[in-house]
Length: 183
Image (cartoon, rainbow, N blue to C red):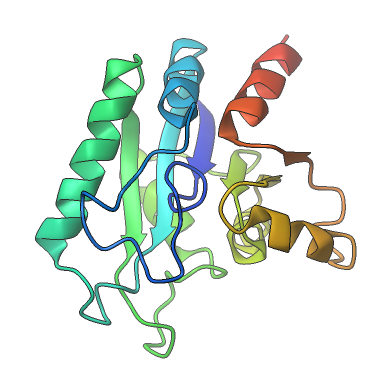
């Protein structure tokens, strides 16, 4: 199985420092749904690993999150894509869970749900903590400049395990590169 793990906010949809709290605020990044479709058509299994502390903070409900994910899933499906699993951390930063990135718990949840290893899979994110979670689970990592990616990019060179991570303008650029690299 060729597994691709995507962060959500800043990779698939516009991010917000005020949190994405509703389906109306969930705005796709141009080209992201098409990129998911391209991945699936090329034989990749696409999953999402996303911190959603807005649940713990009371900024939105589980029903709101489900509606956002339904919108995300529908947009990907319209482009021939699907998400094999969506793992999310509902906890706040002080809750002491094992699933909040940069910890690899969400990736382990994906492994358990799909009965696969994430070793060697790609973790694509817009923040250092996304990539750290990937490294902790044995993934290759890539940073996108969308979302918080431009702010995160300058931190890569000083990070011992992430300095070689490739950087792309957006998810679509990563997908085009990845598919071109396939034998």
